[in-house]
Length: 342
Image (cartoon, rainbow, N blue to C red; front, side, top):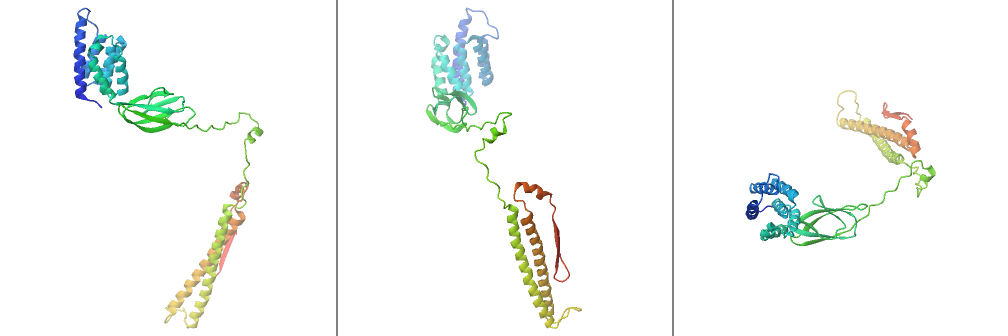
């Protein structure tokens, strides 16, 4: 996060100090071209005054490539501070402050120290402990270190996404809260990835492959799923047959009662309560026929499932090639005719 007032105030101070030193130096030197350190830094400062910190950073980096001076490195750090790149800013500014022999650094050390204090207020330290493995450490998706680490890692303060990867071990990922100017400690526990079983070499004999089998598989059960379904369907067939028989008896009794009342269905509606008796005879007959037909169909299906269902893998192909047709229909009266082909 940027702090505009503090940044522009510090920029003005550094700019004045730079201008004074540059003016003094130009008395005894010839004018420099646009690729010189002074010209590049001047361009960078003008860009920073316009709020174009990213473009200014590029100019300061070019100036540092030309001179490798602490002044250019400090300007890089200040631009990174404005962009919120706290880790890079801290590293570059600490390095620049070690060059106390440069007059520009000594002249502006107080203000540079204030900038460093502000930068460090946005950082914390992260200590990773655990088994020493070789691997990589990422913070918020960016690789920042390698394992093993010999010192705490400087990271942005607040909540960060930590990822640790080591060859031969499962990756570690977690969210860590790092206090500003403080230290967060995270233990690492590495879990080894189970080694994959190597494939047999090309051209290996069948014996070499079969020796890898530790325990033979149990033979498949001879009682397949189809037979189990067949039993269930058979029970349903018996229930349907019982229904047919029961309503057949009811039909006969109702027919006797109908005839006993002297009712005849010759023409028109039967007299008195004959209509209800007549309807009862018909309904019982229909249910009886349905019961017999259902029993025949379900019984045939149950027989097929029990007799023809495959009980072993090698029987499935034969079962798939076998055709099956079964059909039942009521005949005149209460009879049922069924036909099938296996």
